[in-house]
Length: 220
Image 1 (cartoon, rainbow, N blue to C red):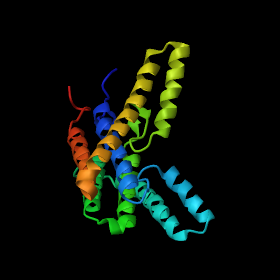
Image 2 (cartoon, one colour):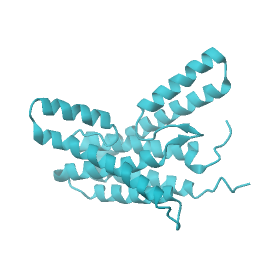
Image 3 (cartoon, rainbow, N blue to C red):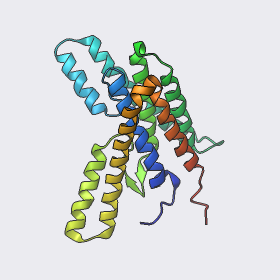
Image 4 (cartoon, one colour):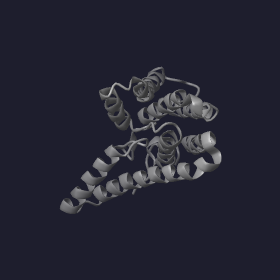
C-alpha cells in the first residue's frame, strides 16, 4: 500500500491514536464507575436504562460524559475554523488532549464524574480531529464504523477481486486490533498505576504528536 500523503492520515499515527482510544475506554469503564469515555452509544443506552427506573443520580454519570464529548467535537471544530498559525491545528488539539488527560490522572476516585467528563472531552476532540486513514473515513476512539467499513471492503474484495479493497479492509481491522491492544495495556496497568494509568495514554498521544511533526507533503 502506498504511504499516506498527509501524516494525519498515516497508519503510523492511527496506531497510537487507536491504542490511546482503547486505553481511555478501558480506564474510564474499569476504574471510574463503568462509564465509557468513547463509546457514547453505550452511555446513551445506560442513561436510558437508569432513566426508566428513575435513578437520576446514575443518569448524571452518563449524561455529563455525553455532553462533554459533544463539547469536545465543537471545540475541535472551533480550533480548526480559527486557523491557528503557530502550529498545525491538529497538533494543537493533541496538546490539549494530553493536558486534559494529565489533569484526569490527578483527580481522585471520589470525583469520577469530573474525570469521566474531561476524558470524554478529550475523546471528542480526537474523534473530530482525526477522521481519515489513507483517504478513507475512520475513527480512532470507537470501532463500530471501522467494523462496518472493513467488512464492506472485504466483501467487495471477494466479489470484485480488487486488491485495493482488501488493503482497505485490512487497514480498518488493523486499527481495531490497535484499539484492543490499548484496552489490554490499560487493563494491565490499572492494578499498579490506578488513576495514573491514563498517563500511558498521554505517552501514546505524545508519540502521535511527534509523528505529526513529519511533513509528508513537503518531504521528497
